Length: 247
Image (tube, rainbow, N blue to C red; front, side):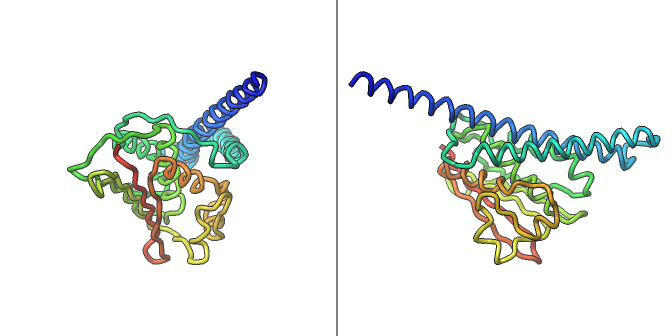
């Protein structure tokens, strides 16, 4: 009997170690990808001479850096896909965090990309907002990165991304991210949160992507007992909504 219990304890220990390893890879890979995306747009600003003149040799080196950066982003996307083939791997480390502060930092991270595409970000925050919620901060950062990155990626140039944050009740925080972009076609709406799924118009707009972002976003939100949904049309663009319990 002692041997059986020992085996069970060892299995539980190994399971916990595997979950911790998967979470670490998942969070780190997402944060690396966001930083690489920011670097990509800064390099492109140099390459396009938006930050001053460069000579042909400098431009050649910058183009090589951009190409290397794209390859690393692709590797990180593959790492994310392989690491989290099952959403049950996600475990949460809950603590009180200031949600608006996190959101403002993430918006700033994308300033290089929005400038390059001439996209304006409008951030609307309710005056009566309850700022703190209990959540896994690293996981929520992944959610915000995914939603804002997608909004920018699939926007048309010279448009606006609108991010709104409010209390929809005394017990929930609601955020919406609206873009003026390609929209989600009716035939894709039922599959948009499926693992590895990418709509045809999304692939045409941006060939890079694993189809894992919205799947992982939905998994994280639901692990927090929250909800995620969207509204989309070709004429009006797309709005993603999330709610998270305040306590």
